[in-house]
Image (cartoon, rainbow, N blue to C red):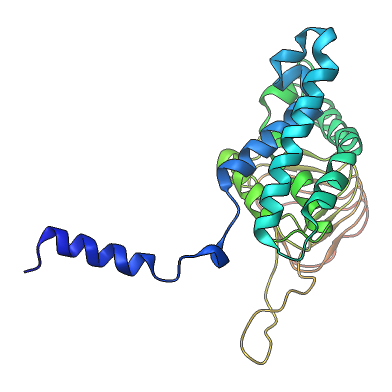
Length: 270
């Protein structure tokens, strides 16, 4: 029998094979730090104690923006040698005011839909949907700029923390609310309009896949289109490239695989 030293040596040698600079990957810890900085920039009164003093506000925000720029440059450079990491980081940071505006509409939507909440600050501090949407809207913006890998890591950080699984490729409009949130799944090609509300356990997924000649699944539109004003209650599954019409209501625990007319209500049969 091999000695302990020999076994450990052999394991290390085998694990070290193929590891090198060409296999650099982004750092999950650094990306988590980047999202924390984004939260501090978007909601400084809530996530950055240093802005409690108004005289320090501009300085603190400037320091955080500079830190965010450095992390984004570093991490984007790791995922693509042909990407202009500096330009992409600056472009993303320039869009943060608009990102904040849209996220505040999500906060308003949660506040308007939940009688259990007392004020918008409570929503920002403690509701998982805000955490998930900061991650999603950040990831979606980076994905639109052609940044690979990083957007999926960012949304998976929120998935792990909240149980809300939103693919960065999904398109989600303004005033988006998720009540509770645990178990919500929103697929890559899903398109969601404005003023849409989901409850816990909702799946906006695909019904089946198409494959290429080599047997690999094709990335085609395969998730639902949810029009403005739709409400989908807990544990409903809406599957396939179907359209849920404007102001429709999908009741809890139903399985929807065909188009739903605007204003319709789909509920379980008694």
